[in-house]
Image (cartoon, rainbow, N blue to C red):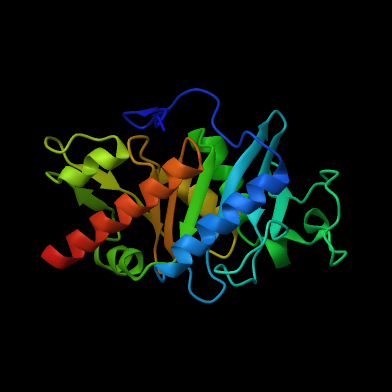
Length: 228
């Protein structure tokens, strides 16, 4: 699949081209994949895809659930502010309607996903809690400088030449404040950021590219820690 990304810029209509239920199934599958790596331990982490641009609507994985065993119903559909919206989806057999559940209880970081989408133009966002991202955030609180690594090509950057910095931002339980910090530190060449003491956010034109960016940036962090 073509990446739709050149030098950090998003091109074309990024997002999910299908129903919210299909998006839920895809997010559940990706969550299980990341959980199998130990990157979403317990109920940590969340993933999202853009359903529509105007108005902006995202499907976000529900919080408080084991990410290895999500179902297509375990999503919350939110607007540009991270607020739940009604989508007209049929209620699941349990009688629960994901869009009607409180964002704070079911998709705690939905507002940050929406902020990243608005800032970067991405179509999908991945948030994982990896050991390497937490270690890197403590070791390089001003940002992780990356250069002369072949794997940089996996995020659309040259393998050699001028270094590029992966932003590291402080953590906050206030998603608006965290979003402000991420926006201030945002590097348009880098489709990811580390939140200190928390984890890694990565994004892409669509869900597959966001997965690849997450895996590549995680690899780069592991290498930097190993050679430091």
